[in-house]
Image (cartoon, rainbow, N blue to C red; front, side):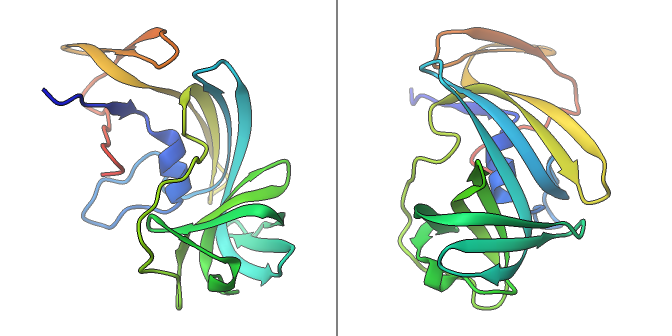
Length: 196
């Protein structure tokens, strides 16, 4: 039997996507998010803090990118030699990104780590699919504080692992760090597999 992995509350991936799903899909808890901060713990016990911002690119150079978020806040990030440009599973260069496009910037300490989910005229597409080591690689747990376009905020806990028990209203997962977590749920639980 093929091993199946399920990510419960796939907060990091939903934030990285940065935009609501199409109208015929259920919108997740991060639809309308303009800014989020995640404190993530990895299977080796290390911890990292990641920041996500989504907005229109209003300034771009080889050393910085500025977004104007939908809440009218401007945020700027330093572009480094290790900044990645990703769109729809493919890798691109900074030259493929243009002022006026919408994008999500995943950052740490003010440095753009990944510019992704680029939308708008001339958005890069068609590159071969490739895997990267993004914020979720090796993560097991964390918390995400999300800020929405209307100024409201919400916090989410994040656990990632393999389902080891499932009963009516209860789900147990074993994370890669060996910890077992049991979660209660009801009919409002949103389950996503690979973003769908």
